[in-house]
Image (tube, rainbow, N blue to C red; front, side, top):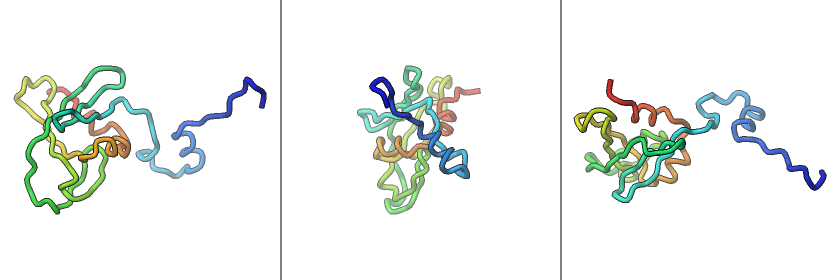
Length: 129
């Protein structure tokens, strides 16, 4: 290798497709159009990577047994209810008349790292019909 040559670099998607060709499409890493950040009030902010916030999810009181197992709507991780927050976001274009509720991991950074795709976030930011 000469001084000007750079080592080959491959994306995670290329590596998975090359070495693990039977991997289901849902599990193959792909670029994400959204990121989810922790908000100061304990909620989450869905941010468009192209720029701007798409949705703000506010925390609401959670009901039910603390030991009950639930599943995160964003990353599909499952665990005891005490590890999750219940969040509410206004449906875009509803003028505060309609809301969508989600269960999300308390550890927002770990949740974002586990999230495989934007399917749920796409549904959350869909405007009212």
